[in-house]
Image (cartoon, rainbow, N blue to C red; front, side, top):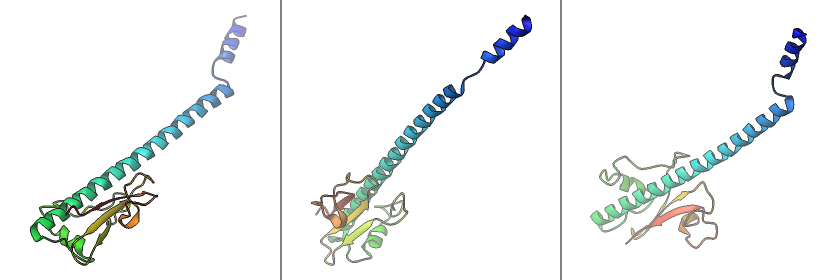
Length: 147
């Protein structure tokens, strides 16, 4: 009689296959939700960094203007601003995801400039490509001269 009771206790211990499948499914769903949230947080963080970098570059351009009464001109205008050690002590910032330079347009007269960064989250910027602030698809964050 004792052997039968011991055998019944062993048979009832443990989880059924269905219970294990339900628990594993719930864990899988939670991991998927966590991964999606983490990816979104990474995109927001990179976009915030891009906006901060653009503002830093804009401040460097304005310091350049204060010293020279004109903005730098042509294709090398970013290098010219980057040579101001006091305005960008850590060097010229680059895109945190691609490592490439930001989009920069300097006119030939030294009156205007526009610097832009393509954001990860579409539709959250203030401009379209090439400083088109009236664009419908605002996927870029851009800043222009303040003078």
